Length: 102
Image 1: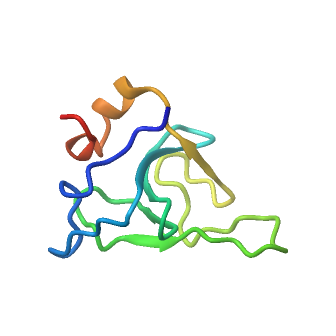
Image 2 (image 1 turned 30 degrees about the vertical axis):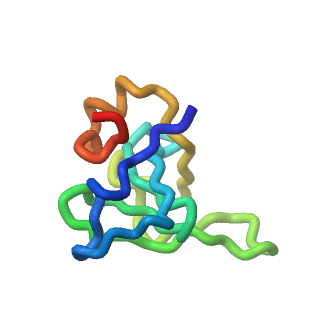
Image 3 (image 1 turned 180 degrees about the vertical axis):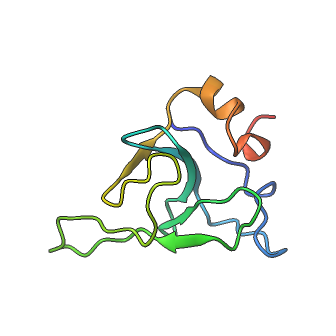
């Protein structure tokens, strides 16, 4: 089960986005945590500055993902992410203040 984020707690620029679908994700290589908006395809990489994000949409014919920044944890340039499944890791991670159910 994916770890979801409370939209009201993760308020971007003072505008509550009820359509966003935030999920805590991790780098597939090193488990550095990020926040992904599945609805708008945005990856947030700084829990203290919600203006730091990039689009994760990859074209249909593009088989290789090239994100504009390397992973903050391992520094890999060619990296990907997956949903974090372990709630205990999310509860101690950088996005813990936004997790649903707290």
